[in-house]
Length: 184
Image (tube, rainbow, N blue to C red; front, side, top):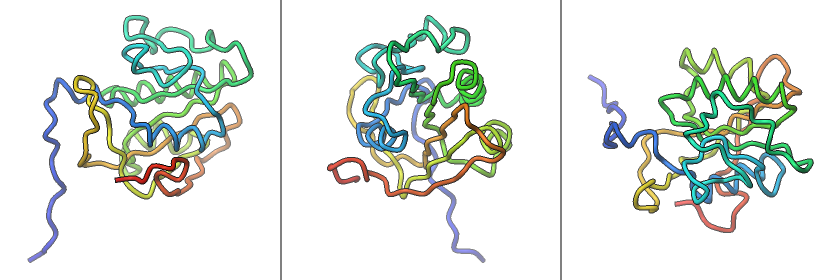
């Protein structure tokens, strides 16, 4: 008989699963990994208050349809994308397409699930880099604006660039390395 226990199931109500905001710690690491001080565009913000970019695509504008190349007044052609996880495949496909079409660097925060079919189809041979943190990031509750601890899955940063080769390069890093704040 095995002592292995199954992973903790999510206690998040279904109607809230797609509404988790990026923590400052995760954003700080993503910016440092992409080598920029800010993202020019947030492809998935629900409001300007939640945006992690200088500009954002509101849900009613539909980031899966609108062109992402409109928002770049300077040389910083970077996009942040923390997609609704129920639509991660669609956003990964769109990120790759928009990166190539508009010469953008697109950083997506998604669940780290390299053994899945969707990962093999949309990440493995499409992304330029996959940054894998040493621990889990907490998210911010969309309603309360408070940090939600005890996330039961690992996230990673998947970066698409026009310079993509054949296979995504996986790079491990220490979560919180770019911030003075200690990860919890």
